[in-house]
Length: 347
Image (cartoon, rainbow, N blue to C red; front, side, top):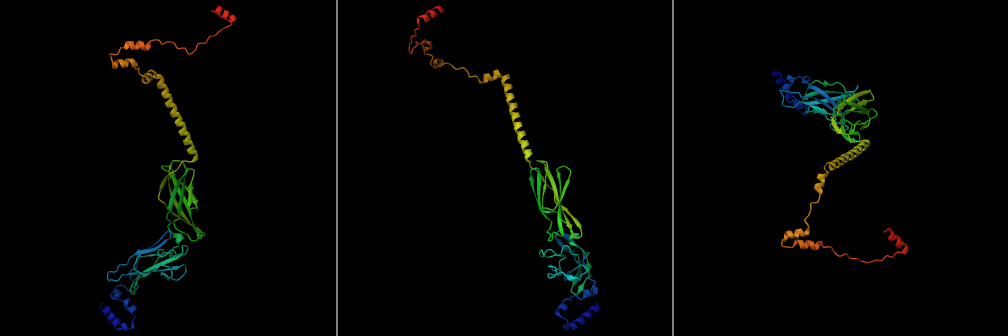
């Protein structure tokens, strides 16, 4: 501590020879004797996340108990057999120089940010506090296409068809040059409660599962596979979430349904008609009794019942007396004598 006070006094004497920037980098000289210039603790557990198009470097923060100033971090990168470059906006599109955050997202700034997906990239990281800094922590090199974790296809839409399922989706991430890398797709599907089947590979983002049973529930998952032609590398992606759909009837099934419905309706009507005919024959007397018109009282008797003083017998005799025959015309028919004799003989 005494040596620290002496050194601080010497620095104060020579302060006129130092720039303001140099002075600001030495606000806590006691740290120099606790942590030598190159012995600031290094960031721990750095890791690189390569998921779809994401390129993120993260680490655990460096904690100092004797300083109130925040520790900052610096990230550098290099390509194969090249020198180290600063990760600033001019070089890579993302500023990861003297940052307080504990991650550097190379894909966050813009679509053009980040490292080329087919380049060999090496990253290194260190902590800084004024003039103090830690040793560099160098991560293993990576190539995005070689080391990426491929997620499931996105925006999956399924349209049930006639004994089929039409599947449309988008790729896990965009590939600028499809001549060097592209996706294949596989569909895992099964009838609910049945055995799983796999169909593929397909280059298209629209897949049709045909020859399925109508009116059955099928479940499916879609999977992408990245192929990098340059190194002949395959990266199998994650499966999508399971989704289930019911197929529709095809033309032949609809015709069969119409025929079955028609035959069933005709058979039902025949059974009902036969049952009705059998009941009519068996209960003919009862049915005749139910539908027979009950006898009615003659008008004269009904009037008599209303007025018993009326001479009912005279009224009945009067109504039942024979009426004189009324002739509209009389015709006289004459026969010749011979025919008349034949008629008389016949009589």
